[in-house]
Length: 55
Image 1 (cartoon, helix red, strand yellow):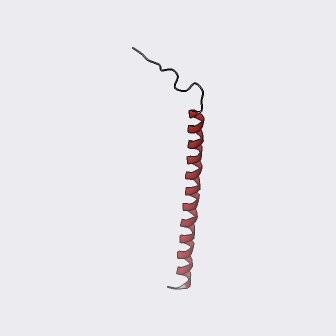
Image 2 (cartoon, one colour):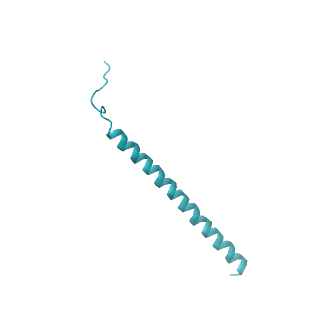
Image 3 (tube, one colour):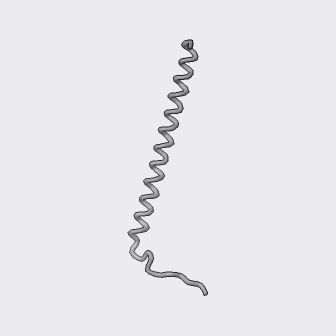
């Protein structure tokens, strides 16, 4: 493989890795937000004390 082709291949691999890292960070941030919202909802003092029923 010649040098320019190797350089392009290495750059593409690096770019793919950086994109994967960015997506993983975004997923972790979203998961953390979901966990925070779930904990906040669970800790709500009146949650689950009443049921709305329509006949």
